[in-house]
Structure formats: structure tokens, C-alpha cells
Amino acid sequence: MTWSHLLRVAMLCLAGFAGMASAQDYAEQQRKAAALLDALDAGQYDAARADFDAAMSEALPTERLRQVWQSLPQQLGAAKERGPAHPEQINGLSAVVTPLHYSLASLDALVTFDSEDRINGFRLVPGKPPEHAPAPAPQNAPFSEREVTVGPDESSLPGTLTLPRGDGPFPAVVLLAGSGPNDRDESIGPNKPLRDLAYGLATHNIAVLRYDKRSHARAEDFSAGDYTVEDEVIRDALAATKLLRKSKGIDRRRVFVLGHSLGAMLAPRIAAQDKRIAGLILLAPPARPLEDAIVDQMTYLAGIDGHFADDERAAIDTVREQGARVRALQPGDMPAADTLPLNIPASYWLDLKGYDPVAAALKLRLPMLVLHGGRDYQVTAAEFARWQQASWPHGNNAGSRVTLKDYPRLNHLFMAGDGPSTPAEYAQPGNVDAGVIADIAIWINAH
Image 1 (cartoon, rainbow, N blue to C red):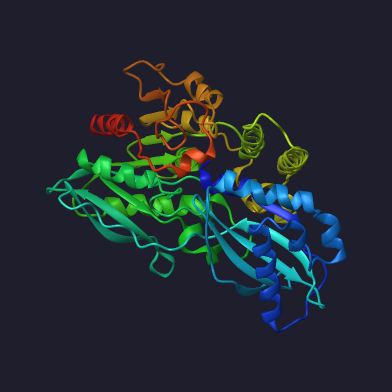
Image 2: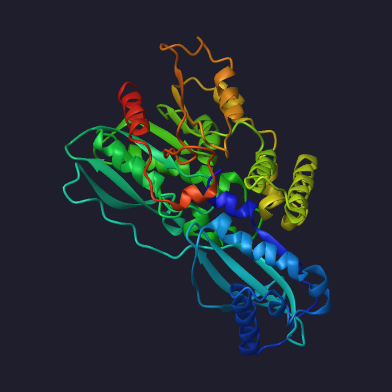
């Protein structure tokens, strides 16, 4: 899981939306939504509740509001600019939506109103980060880049093909980001781990294709609310490998897939559908159900300060209960998404139910490189141990088709540090460890 999923884990449902709103003039509602956020920023938590209706006042007392608001910079980094508010209809209710940008991620503040313009709902949900054009490759770099599109023309995704200088043909890699609506660089605060990998591997004469995830570039494709990992990740990854094989300068027999976190978890499933994939590189591949990982990550984050507040325990209990609902899901079940972890629909969880990435990898007959950061709290050492202890054919010696390696000082982004890893690390500029890139390049060039 990457920071985008952590943001979803930290998603705050401060109070449910209730009642029907009928006001058509949004000016007063926008004023009240802005006053609520201004008061929160000023630390005036009683004043922030001034326009709550009776149910909201009971559901969201001052102390709870204070705890939640003060926790946001700890989880998401320093607060930045607030985006322009806009009206929306959410589940038939009139709402004012205001983007809140932090250094690591963005939230949307959703404020709904009753027929008397009293605030009857307030949620903070993952938002889309500000759009930025892809940065050009460094001048005098030993590679060039060009824009490409992945998938059918009517629903294609923008991407970048990074090509070493020369005629080739070059071995090539498709990069798959972790969970959440990631751009092609997997931007996390000031860090861009997939761009680091693209530039580093291209320097080692390996072509690289990276592209914006569908949930980032075409969020409208998921508006029906019943999507799966096939819709979000797998279909596009298969289109990307197909595109690479048809691209000039690419050795079509040596097209690899490199996945990070969720991308690594799904890579064996992708390779099972594309028998021409030459090998897999798995960076921080999970080895347990996502619903279990969420509980452990929330527990880790809540315990960083050595103290579990009552609201933190309640949030963990809620996610644990949601995980139990996931485990009980049966085909055809369609509970509301907000009763399941991360506000992700039942169709997504059902698609993942029973999927074991280690077991899926064991069924493949292609080379694999499995890498883990020793300070990674999102994909833990225990998960990496399961990859190490799997009954790989011919064992795990130097001649095996499966190579596993651990980097003690690296975190989930494969960036170096010391001591226990925390989300605050992701707000500090860094780069993917050069040794990791070199190890990947040596492995690819040997296959």
C-alpha cells in the first residue's frame, strides 16, 4: 500500500449525511462551509459547530472535532492552499465541496445542508491532487522521453515512454503504481518513486513505460461504484505490455512488469493472463489480505506517539468490523461502500477475496525478483518472510528463478532512513535508493 491508500485509511467520516436539502441558492451554503473551515484552521472548534443541526452537534462534539482536525497535519503533512469550493449533489443532497491540500495528499471537505441551511453532514474524503504537467527529462540525460497513450482510444490513459539513447532493441519494463489514484510518477508529497525508477533504469539501457492510473486520469470511469481490480489495474497493465511490444526499439521478447505495493500484489495475476511477460519485479509485495493490513497500519500509526486515544481505538475497531464484513461477503452481496474498508465497493473486495499473491506467483514459471525495505511498516517483515519461505521450485539459491532481497535501511518507497518509519518521512524529499535501481537493472539485463 502506498500513501494514497494510507489517505483512504485515514479517511474521516465525521458525521453521516441525514435529511434532505432543498436550497437552490448555494451562496449561503458556501459561506457557511467556508466559515466552518476557517474556524477549524483558527482552532476555534466551538465556533466551527455554530451552524450544525442538532444531530450533528450530538454526533460531533467539540473535543472530537479538535482531535480529528489536529491529527491531519500529522498524517498528511503541512497544510497548503485551499482549493475553490464548488456545489455538488451527493446522494440526493446539496453539498459544498472544498479541496484541502496538504504536502502529502489532498482531501475534499464535503459539507451538506438541510432545508433550513443548517449543516447536517461533514466528511473528509480523499481528493484529487492539483494537476501538474509531467516534468521533462533532465537535459543531457542518456535517454529520451515521449508521450504515449495506453489502452483504447476512447478511454486511453496518458503515459510516458522513457527510451535509452541508441537504436536498441532494449529490454523494457511496465511500471505499476501502488493503491489509490496515483499519477505515472506515483507522486507522494515531493517524492516520485516511479519516475526515479524510470530514469535510473533507462540509464542502464532499459526502456520504461509508466502511465497515470485510471482512477487518477479517468475517475469518471468508476462513477457507477461497482468496479473491480480488473477495471482499476489489470486491464490497463495488459494494454501497456501490448503497447511496449509494438513500440520501435523494444525487444518484444523481454518485456517485464515491475509493480510496487498493490501493483506488486497484482503482478502475478497479470502475468497469468499474459504468458509473454518475460519476468516480474515485485517491490514491497503484500502477502496478506488488504483488509487485515489496513487494521495493522492504523494500529501502527495510532501508536507512534506511545498513546492510543479513545477516538483512535474507536476508528481501529470500526475498520476491524468493516474487515469482518469483507470476509463475510458472498457473490451477489452489495452492502453500501461506506460500510466497508476505505469506502471501496463490495465488487472490489469480492474480486480480491481469496486472492493470494504468493500462491499465484508459485503457479508461474517465469523469473521473479522480490525486494523489500526493512523499515517498511506498510508491507511488513512478516509479509516478506512469507515470500522468502514459499516453496519455490529449486529453492532460493543463486541459480533459482526467484531472487529475494531485503534492504534494512529502506522504507516503503525504497528510500533510506533510520529508526521507525512514519508518514512524516514521505514529506521529506528523497529518491529511490540507487543500489535498488542497480540491482533491478542487473537482474533484468541477466534475463
